[in-house]
Each structure stands twice: as C-alpha cells, then as structure tokens.
Image (cartoon, rainbow, N blue to C red):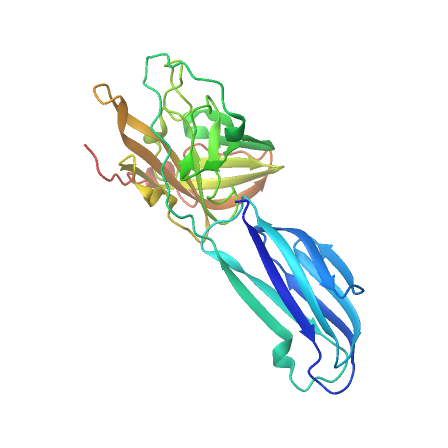
Length: 311
C-alpha cells in the first residue's frame, strides 16, 4: 500500500485523414487511487468517474501526438494476484485498423517477505504497554464490525497498517484487527483478521474461544447497512510462523487468527488457531443470524473441523 504507479498513454493518428470524435477510456483497477491525469499538449477534456477516466480529444489529425500521464497510488484493497488496466479508443471516423485502439497492462500485487505478527500476551499476567507510536496507529472505520454468534462475540474492526515485513497488533485490546495487504473485509480474496486470546491485563481476549468454532458456524461482517455472512470451513492449528494463513483466494474468505498454548518457559505461544470461513450470503442489516445453522442443513449436518499440527 502507498506505492505510486504511473501509466503513460500515447494517442496518435496513423491514418492519412483526420479522425473525428476521438475518445479514450481508461478503466483503472479498484486497488489504485487516481491522483492525477495530465494530457500534453493540453486541451482535451478529462473526466474521472470512480476509477474510469474519459478523455475527449475531438478531432485528431495525422500529425497530432498526445501523451497522457496517469498517476495512481496503491490503496489498502490491493491483494494478490493484482489486476489489469484496460484502455480503449473510439472514433466516429472509418478505421482501417481498429486492433490498435485497445491496450492493457497487468499490475501484479506481491506481498513479498512477510512476518506473521508476534504471539500475544501471557494469560493471567499484567503486561505494561508503552504508548502506541503514531506511525503504528490503527485505522478506524465507521460502521464496520465483527459478530460471531456461536461465541457471543461482537467487536469493532480496525485496520492494522503493515510496517516493514509485518504488523504490530499489540494495542488491539478488545478490537479485531484487519491486516493491511490482505483483502479488505467483504471484498474478494482472503481477509486476515486477528484478535487477542489474552489481553495485556491477563484477562481473556475476544478470540479466547476461537478454537471452539465448528464447521458451518456463522461469522458476520457488518458493513455499512449490510450483513456479510460467512460459514466456517475449517479450524486449523498451525505454527506461529506459518504463512499459509495468507494464501490467496478468488472468492471472499475470512481467516480469523489468534494464539494458543502459552509456553511459560519460552514466554511465547506454541500455536496459532486459524479459522477459515467463506462468504455464503449478503443480507440487509437487521436480518436474523443463526449461531450454528449451516446453509441448507440442520445442526446435525456439521462435521468436525480440520486440525493440523496438533499436539
């Protein structure tokens, strides 16, 4: 997130007569914010609607050469594998070679070397935290929160910025943290959300019973008037440095992560719990959500979760 990507478009007329009503449309991927569009020489009208850029050149003569510079910045929704910037040109004049009126370029999103957040606080022990550095401040979202009916859990979701190779979740307290660089909650891809199993006070954290979730249990992301309903597909026990929790998904998935098995001698946790859930429904806010009712079945249809690396 925050990287600048610049696209350069060159518009010319390869024919021998004027081209009338020339329009260029550039559809920029949603994970890029458009900062500026500059046309040289100046004159053509530029319009921006969402992530679609429309440039009206009017008449383009055989001697005209226009250079368009589009400056964009990668936003927090960027997830692997990336996307494509598509550009098309239209004209009302006859065109002997329409194949050169389209172009595209693929932008690959690579997370690079990752470091899973450090394991959390010791249970039953008070941990004194220093003030949270300004550069590590979490991002607050209006009307974005997490509900897990089977756990009786409701908590807000904040954005945890990525610093260097990883994330610092020390100051989450009772909130859930969405890890920047994974899919934004409710979007396509794998959204990794973490919360503490034990708070700095030594008391139980919001994900203290995450490991008790079972196949088909509902996880709900409440977002701006809609309920995005997910169903648990697996609850895995993994090592603290296992990067499989970040694996890419084409559909909208959640991976809920917390710690398990505190080792007093090593002052760390032996395992992480990774509960994976897939989107099954989008409903209006206020709809009733069943705590343990898989879609298309009864509570007797649940099967045991999958465990990996168990003790």
